[in-house]
Length: 60
Image (spheres, rainbow, N blue to C red):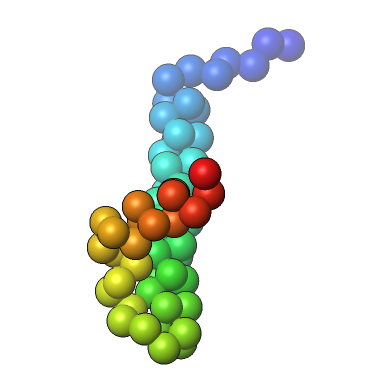
């Protein structure tokens, strides 16, 4: 017996995966904001480009 993995089935799977990725991104950003705020600095500092440049320079 052959299963039919048509466009509808694939679209539903990709939609669910997309929602999971979106929620992961939202919770990642919220976690960074909360962690930065609890650490004693400006919570919005994690959104500044200079912070990300510093982190990527640190990883090199």
